[in-house]
Image (cartoon, rainbow, N blue to C red; front, top):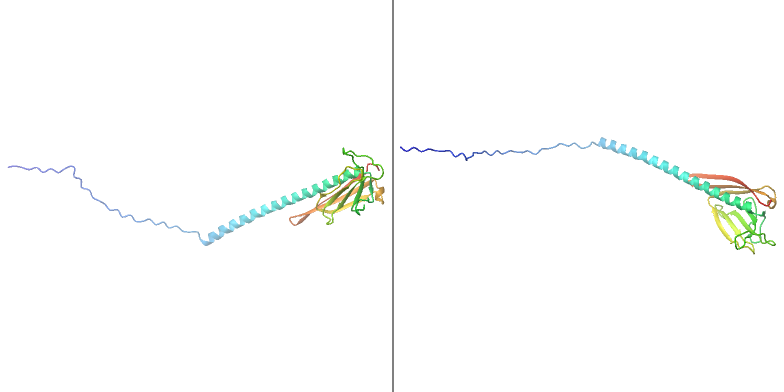
Amino acid sequence: MDSKLVYSSPFIVHSKTKTVNREPITVNQNGLALIELLIAFSIIGLVSILIAAVYFAHSRLFSTQNTLVDVSSQNKLALDEMTNQIRESQEVVSTCALCAGDTTSNSLVVLQIWPIDSSGEPFEPTGSDYDFIVYKRDTDNTKLIKKIIPGAGSQRKASQKIIATNISDLQFTYDNPDPTLASEVTINLTTSAISGGKTITSSQTTMAVLRNK
């Protein structure tokens, strides 16, 4: 009797396929509440206001200091210019033939000085051919003008220039009721400018002695 052996193949793998149902994960994100937004904006606004206040305060202070330095510098430079010129002058005169109506007063001074030669050296003129220098305010009373009027034999150039701006007051005081006999001239100069709605003022006084008096 023939017998049959039945072998199970070891290579037959019985697998089961599992189906996995993946459900989407839902994340519940809550947004900022209105009150939180209002608080955040309020804090940002307050900080911005504080920063702006500090910035503008420093800006105004910086502008005021710059204006004060500028006003004081102009005042000192103008005073030094006039003082040195008065010390080099022969005398204060009432007016001169070429002064176009400029007459010495408490707000204007006419100075007589020696003429200069082609080398720039001063010399004593023969006759009355002196040079003249006038210091006065302009027609708007805001600028200080220096006008040079040379004599006939002088090599000095005629000119008119602004030596200071923002002039609010200019006063000349003489040590003699007759300015032409004065040996000392006291100058009071006031300069002012507006910065940040405030008027910045510098007022200085100096005295000059004429060299030949």
